[in-house]
Image (cartoon, rainbow, N blue to C red; front, side, top):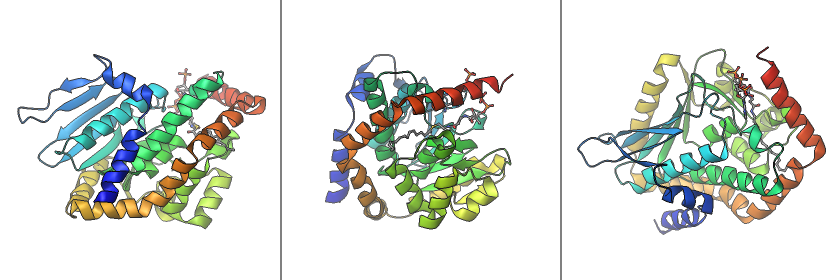
Length: 302
Ligand SMILES: CC/C=C\C/C=C\C/C=C\C=C\CC(=O)SCCNC(=O)CCNC(=O)[C@H](O)C(C)(C)COP(=O)(O)OP(=O)(O)OC[C@H]1O[C@@H](n2cnc3c(N)ncnc32)[C@H](O)[C@@H]1OP(=O)(O)O
């Protein structure tokens, strides 16, 4: 228990000033309808939290249209929602899903990594690290109900969860496809994938930038279950019930035991990782290829 408490204190201490600022800002987040049972529901512009206090579960819906790209503001809101749910003893598990049809998350927001200054890149990268640390080490059971395509950072967010349910739709795919953009998945992205699917499969997937369609995602182990699209949420709920049957303290400590060495690697190299990212992303060649990629996305529309 001391270990679990220690980890929570540590991750809480890591909450960034940008998060503290936003938390204090009136009107950005606030109590909303939670029923007369004393349970508070928290809303923010880009995150909708639907609590089910009787089950001890909250559904966290990402709604940052059009593609749930993980912008700085969106990451901040996600982290604040997670922290509020962790601090509310009513909740033992969350289901993270998307409110944007067909898209779970398009990954990191490319506009946060293009044409900005080094200070912005550093701030953004710290927020991405924070998202990974907080979700990966959350004391809650976290289940991803993946109801859309989930490349790169979207896949990373899913990989932080305890269990992944993917909708069986041939249009959906999931994977760390960074090499296709000419960028390199950082070591902690890689570690998370290795921990999930093993070294050989991860090496192949990372080098080739593979985006796995549902059947392959299941075969390789990027997801735990593939179900018809209309059963994603109900499956996530029944899997959650199974996980919540386990005594919480034993499950939490086991989670920390499994994940702490991976998280510690980033915690001890956090500043160096930010410096590496800023150096890398500021390169002319990287900026050019990110710009070109964004242009290609825009031109796709015709
Ligand atoms: C040595 C190493 C040291 C340090 C580490 C260094 C580097 C690591 C750095 C970065 C790691 C990054 C990981 C990432 O997550 S990068 C993002 C990867 N994501 C993708 O490749 C997905 C891109 N998007 C798509 O493929 C499609 O948009 C889609 C399939 C998700 C959805 O297709 P649609 O047809 O439905 O929608 P679109 O018309 O394509 O898009 C609508 C709209 O949204 C914009 N957009 C799409 N994706 C992003 C994004 N990731 N960020 C920002 N904006 C995005 C797109 O441009 C359109 O905009 P407009 O409406 O045209 O303005």
